[in-house]
Length: 520
Image 1 (tube, one colour):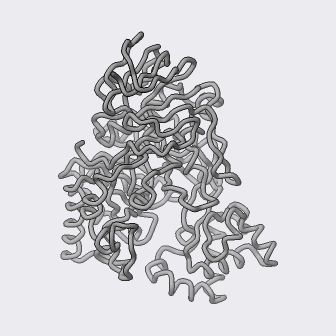
Image 2 (spheres, rainbow, N blue to C red):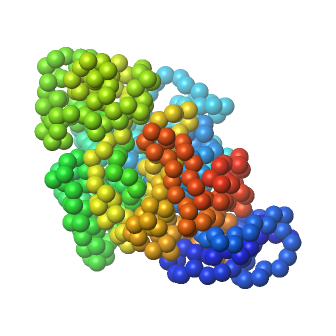
Image 3 (cartoon, helix red, strand yellow):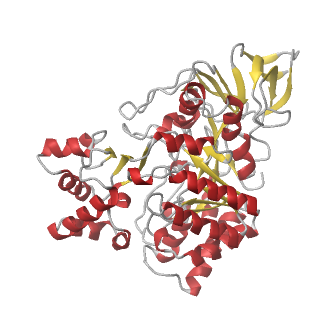
């Protein structure tokens, strides 16, 4: 007797091949048969007539490790068809714990954070048997290794500090992390020289791990940043993934992705193994500190920065730097998402906040940042649609959310809840960026191969029963920057580990996922 039998669906198996009609039988979390007219009883039968059946989607770039123990359901991931997510990206994994974090804080029922997050190994030992709503795999962040050993210091590591970082990196890889991520845009990763990155990358290569990177720059110096990253891949021999590939900031930078994608092609022709991922929006999201405060100043920490930003002299300096940097003197392109001390501003543009307060845009933003002690984030509308489509259509581009989970948040970037359904509805069906089978490959088999998931990404006998069933004629995202939680249309079922985790884009409460370790 089967646990689940999916009848009459059109199979898009993940290879990029055309669809075909067949049934899919599931037993004990595995696909046991894919063929027409499967006979036999099943605990549940789903009629997929008029629908496509695909592998579950793999989010190639996420941050759900931040809430791995506290929000294991990952509801927003499941409700858009994501059955596996890669977390610990942008150099900022949740472990090992930063050197400057000394206060005792409980992590749910799991104990003190100093113990839980002491190393990646301690976290994995706690989390590896915990059921999840969606599968998760971990990278260890280079920036987090620096925080654990050097704090926020803006300098090169000593020989001893380098060895300590290598030891923490090896601990992560030996416990099952898939590789390492760089966050060379953020402090303290931005303080690392290229040779430091190469030395740590060589350790990743020892374990045949993957090296993902939020590069040093995605704007004026995009091409230089790609060149640096490819030099790290070349010197280490690692497989590489350029994170959320884009060119942003001002219109003069739009179109540079054509050059950067050619660089990827040339590197692969040379014998390297390089990919990228992309989310389907023209707005990014990150903390406001990283977008507006000069990199060299971030090493002083939030408390000192807050005091400094209250002074007129520093405000004028930062204002001039950013007007030159972004090519505009207004902030109507910045939408606040999280603002702990001013929750009433969440979802508002900085320009509207300024009008409400009777201030100039930058003055209003600086006041808000100071009130929140730099702990505020926003969406930044600085990209162009053509670039998004250009990157998305590249044969080595995967799809991602670049997000964690919503938890209690009211406002957040809709990529968190709608990236994959948006790609299928707006970019495949409406705009024809790629064919549906090719896009499914980018969402499933390709990331599975890149990150080494041997039993995921294909609708084949013996593979894990992580599946999506949807209507290709109606699937669409409904979430927006004003209504972030609106659920998708046309996504009928999401199946994780053989369990129905979502019906009609609504989470069922099933916990069929687990933590995936390197080599599994």
